[in-house]
Amino acid sequence: MLSDEGGNPLAEVGLALSMAFFSLMILMLVAVLNSPPTNQQIKMGNNGTGPTGEKMDLFVYSSGQLYDKDLTRLNVSALPADQKILLAIDPQLELSAVLEIVGKVGHQNLQITKLDAAWQARLKSKRASQ
Image 1 (cartoon, rainbow, N blue to C red):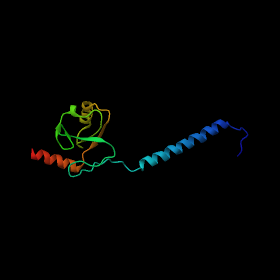
Image 2 (image 1 turned 90 degrees about the horizontal axis):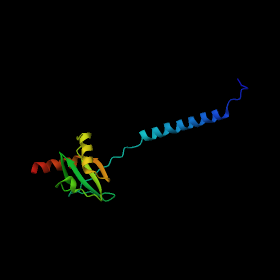
Image 3 (image 1 turned 180 degrees about the horizontal axis):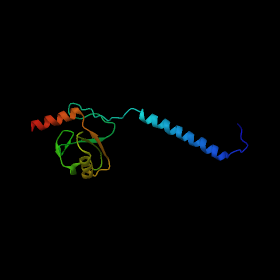
Image 4 (image 1 turned 60 degrees about the horizontal axis):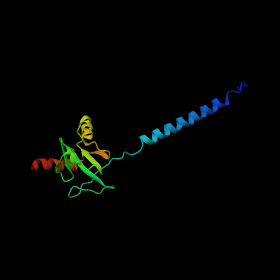
C-alpha cells in the first residue's frame, strides 16, 4: 500500500541514524565481551627481579607489612616519590585495606597488582625463616 502523505524526511534520516548507532553499539559490546583479558604477570627470576618494559619499582604489601623486591621490610614513607611504583598485594586482601594502603602511599604513579603463587611462596618461606 502506498501512502500519499509523504512523511517527514528528517524523521526518516533520524530513524536511520539511530539504527546505525544502535548497530555500532551492539558490535562494540560484542567486541569488548569477546576480547581476551589482559593479565599483568610479574615473572620472578633467581634474585626476585624480572624484566619490565619501563622503569618501575616493585614493592610488596602482605600481612600489614611493606617489603621491597628483596623482601626487606620498609616503611611507607620510604617509597620513592619520583618513580613509578608497582605495588603487589595479597589477593585475599579486602578492598577497604587496599584503599587504606593507597591513601597511605598517596603516590600519583602507583599501579596495583596481585601477588602470584611464586611471590606468595617466597613470602611464606621468608616468614618461616624469621
